[in-house]
Image 1: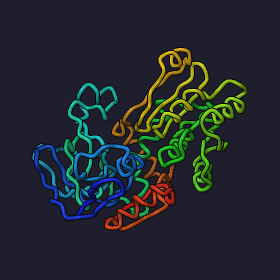
Image 2: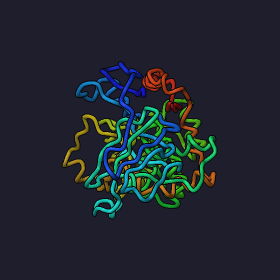
Image 3: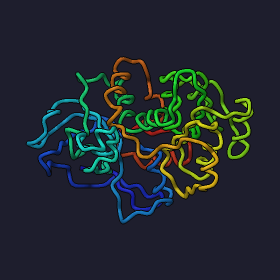
Image 4: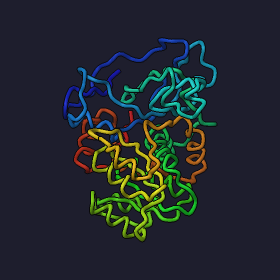
Length: 338
């Protein structure tokens, strides 16, 4: 089997690797139907996150079960399944509280940009579809594995309610699907902060009512002006930089909610500013498994079409071009097909 390995900044290779097999009774092995490049993959690709030697890549996946361990009960060979980027037993206290991405037995999936994938804790991680989905639904089902689940968590953690005013900081795939999620949750006004015309258009298609191109202090001032000096009820931070985090907090009204789902890099919060901001702040790795059944149902019922975030589709062996296109912002998100 060949799979994706990152050797260093800008150095993605598709090379021979060992074919996954059942190692534990709780494992499943799936044949990948589709995978993709995540915005978070770009941090190590750009050299902004250290590597400990050559690193297998990929954590978003869906596909057909090939084999299961002797203890697996909830999925069987031949079923189409989607799983989270974080494995979970779905029974520990953290899972029962709805934070499966902090499961006591959690492992992070890191080898999904390949034709086959071993998934630990299969019973608590994988969710099967009722039937084999049509091929046109596969891209949207793939988004539920992470990028849609993360956008949904961003909206949920920011307490988006019917009639609320929402700001989304970040116009990558997570931010765009944060817009879609906020619309599904009934937000009345959704302000997407973006400078990229293609992404602005997709944000509007997903439900954005306003676009703001300013960033930093200028962006905050614009949001405050647009909300009559008050700020937004809910702000979704979907980038992970110091500027985006402070922009999100400062756009939030007193007593409002800000979520942060962009993996933080160099983010530091001032205790004094946080104290006087009077903002509810909640985020972290999205507990995708909590939302998977609902999101899969929305996709299968064709109530949402999150697969529109994939604006570049490549065969898996062309994965290096997919990274390059996203790094250069020529693509929002790259879909990879084995």
